[in-house]
Length: 400
Image 1 (cartoon, rainbow, N blue to C red):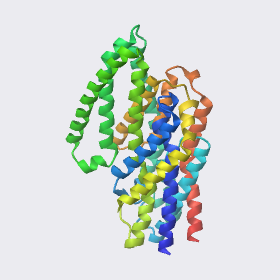
Image 2: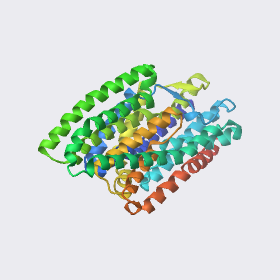
Image 3: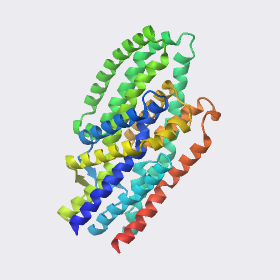
Image 4: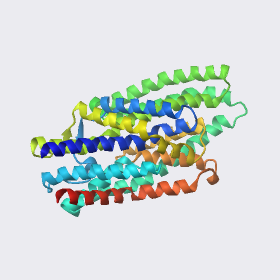
């Protein structure tokens, strides 16, 4: 019986990973596709490769058994926890499948959190739910898009004032390029250490800053020469942002694989841990092949269905240029980095969409499609209760 449960958990983990790839790829590649910096096919291939690399080489080998500490497992019987993990994977996966079919970008992390909440309420009642943590998740629906949107608006206005609106934008871009490139690479390198398990392995905050600063200096020098080459041969400021934007999209894809693979693997690891040891701890060890399974599942989701949500974020919210798209990626990553450091469980999906809206508002309200924004907002609002409801139903079916 335990072998059957483990087998089902493995299948559901792969299904969840596939959903993560299909929906969340828009976080990293939608802006690059929307500005035609790369083609859709190139975006899907790059995202698939980098997600696998991020999941396998930077993904955590030790995950929380019940993701994000939403449910206290101690009062719940072990067999119920195993069935709860199965119901959570199935419920979150089905909701994300529906959202992806509708082309709606939803948070896969919030989906699994909602599913765990639903099973926890049925299995142990209200006392096993960490309501404070759940409140932070709900608050992040507002904080993530708002903060990223305001930041994107401000960054774009600054670039527009300092470069784009000048009579000779190329000359001003040559001056600003090293600073823009250096700051961007500093933020993104620091994010890899602060937002992924790699930072925990290094365990030295000062070393993280030194590495990030060193990378930023090298990038700034590279940005100087690239911009001067563009000024000499192409005379197009947007070309500089196009090249920088491709790199930022690659970073987000890599970071996504490192972070979100746990949403699929954590419940699976919980089932395996209980089946092997008969007990559940706060943490569960994750072998490398678990991460590989999750990473490959995400990659397959990206390649087979990732285009649906990309179309929404890339084309339906507002019109993008390379400079605007760079501001979106930079602002979303910065917002997630800061929020993570403050201990807030924000969603990269919410931050990315908020940044797109912020850029659209920089051109005026008429520049964004309010109907698309409404549909996305509704999908965010119902993600947690729908996932919770489905998980509760599946859990009752499993134990009976």
